[in-house]
Length: 482
Image 1 (cartoon, rainbow, N blue to C red):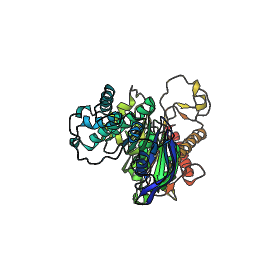
Image 2 (spheres, rainbow, N blue to C red; image 1 turned 45 degrees about the vertical axis):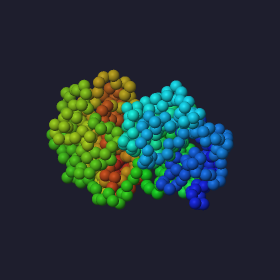
Image 3 (cartoon, rainbow, N blue to C red; image 1 turned 120 degrees about the vertical axis):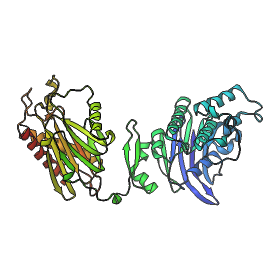
Image 4 (cartoon, rainbow, N blue to C red; image 1 turned 90 degrees about the vertical axis):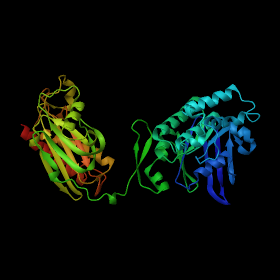
């Protein structure tokens, strides 16, 4: 639908854009990214005809912009510029109605039912119908932004150009606006070209992204091709990390601060406490954590870590809820605590410290083997798991990559299994060597300060310490349990 070929131009004889080329198909959202001053707004002004083209060409439905009359072009293209202060005091309804100007033969002398319907629908979609009689200059910045989006939607043009449409909007209205635009694209085949400052929103809602750097196209493609650490980091001159969105196959960006400013953050042996009720670690600073705990499993940042003792007869329909109530009664906040449970005596937990060139590593294990299982034969177990679980913590003073966290989990699991084999622990149902229990929990946490540790497999110093530590501590815990 829209084709830009070798577009160049700018202001006062200086080219801001240089040989920019790309295409946008019908029913597609193209997000335009780039740092301030890279030429994003200049691009939209040239496409809309507001700014003269210095070189190259813009084609709309294979027809040059110059071949359209202003009114014909307005029927094909709607533009939402950046929000600025306005001197006029039109009402909201009058402002939205201006979107129907391209369809009038006179100054609203031919107002039709279609015009009325388009204005009413646009106001309802953007949630501004309650303001329709108010002067627009009495609205907040976010409310005015929604009014101008409604004006653009009322224009019902097949091509919509947006310059930072979510500016001035809170997150609820950002979502509503972009959901609405996505729906218009999917249901009506509208085409959208939009500038974004928020890379994550652009990645989440756009079919493709165009990254501009110094007035030139750095890359154009699907979000997973554009939102990469090296490309975004280079264009914006900032260090970032990328990770997948939890519900959509779209990459998301996280800013990475200068780790040299993180200070000296180390976990120490005296921060661990073991009592009859639980094993605890309380840190003054949060640790990045990956775990299979009862409370707050998965990944996150936490200060409190608890392995709680429960009786062998413990039975609760909602252990997570009961755990939260227990922790709150003991002064541990739900949102800042990772918690697991065991029937093993927690005052007999094995807590060991290991020294590496990067710093210290701590391994904490409680082991009950009353219901050991051979995972390869687990399909033969039909009864409810009995008492017995192996809970393992690995706490690291160092800065782990995502890959290192996963490798640390693998290394620790392999070391635990080796300990069970070494101690001859068998699955009571099959008589084969056990690999664990049915309810084992594992936690890996790191300070994310100090030495960078990109890997944690057995070929690395970190992996070797984890393997040794988990094996030794698990063997001691099994023997104590026996």
